[in-house]
Length: 161
Image (cartoon, rainbow, N blue to C red; front, side, top):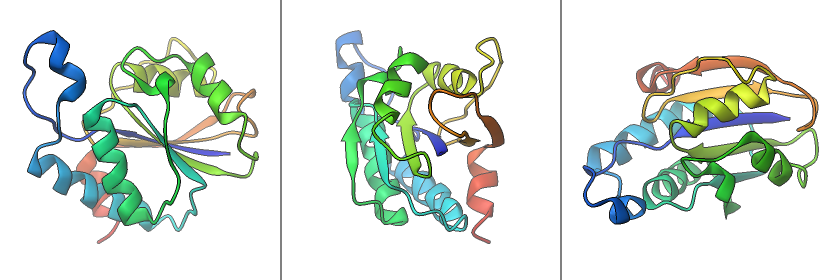
């Protein structure tokens, strides 16, 4: 299974705490996510689906990436919220065949923790920049995977030339 983790793009500034879930991507954030997705498209990976946090900025990131990567299935996934845990995401991935590729869109600090969980090293220190991307390959959601790459947005965008 190929898991591609994508942190949401640059979003509006934080306001009142109860409005955090409603923060939208900025225009620059949208453009950067599209550049990153174009870089990911060079991997020539056919994604079975995109799972995204239900928070607006993540959902908008997923929509932009799905448009570029031609991913037709977009699902909201609670385990990709900012406080998400690997156990929850692993359960959501059980429904996909082990030879699937899935795009996962979420937030920090949970993206780093999810990647660490996916590679079986929960104490690993991983830093995901906004619109940063990482790939983990694993045999199944129940087995530890291998971190193939961790890219900053400019590095991912540069893949497309």
